Image (cartoon, rainbow, N blue to C red; front, top):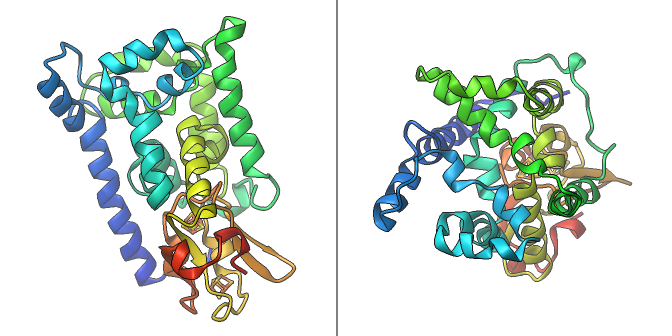
Length: 294
Ligand code: SF4
Ligand code: SF4
């Protein structure tokens, strides 16, 4: 059951929604302002939409050295494998929790679906092996003659929906293919009908997996900022466990701990903890890793 929605949490969601709009305006056509800006600087003759700044293909290309030249010629592809993972190393996957429209839209809409109709995978699925396994599997499809990247792209679905909202329905024909299955998985099964609405992000997003990995490394090395629980303040009420859309907080044997592999730094738990026991802060200053914060 989701905890009571307070005014502070509503204001927090409103702030996150502003960043969501920023994500749409920066990444998605007809706006794609970030892409337009970079295309303007480089003079490259490409269409400005989310495909030009794809967060999936370059990750698959990591296993394809013959594609490295493309990434150097079109540096926007480096965002997925360099810029966002590097940022996540130091500040966590803020992009996932705050700006990614493909993650935030199903999360927001899932709040309108009654909990009794939703699958609750919190505590039932170990996120790390599934998401990293999928990441490796995605990269490996190249070697068995396949390409899972585009068929399983929730960024494309989000672009198609936004384009249709502005009168361009062409992208919707894309759904008359295997993509209808991935749309159903992303938006319906693992979105609206999964508690937190972040099932796809947690299990099947390679960009999220890469950021989860660097976030965890940053936390372990104590060089980054993470979600940290102060055990001296925690009263083990489990409000944070219920409020986490990414199933990243566990309560084992009375110890509350945050799983950096899964946490997308949305900070909902920071707002809902009634005892102010959770902060987004430097792991160095706490001297503890988030996994051991209990
Ligand atoms: S961290 Fe806060 S919300 Fe979570 S169990 Fe402890 S007191 Fe409750
Ligand atoms: S642990 Fe907190 S910050 Fe991390 S995903 Fe869960 S609610 Fe968001």
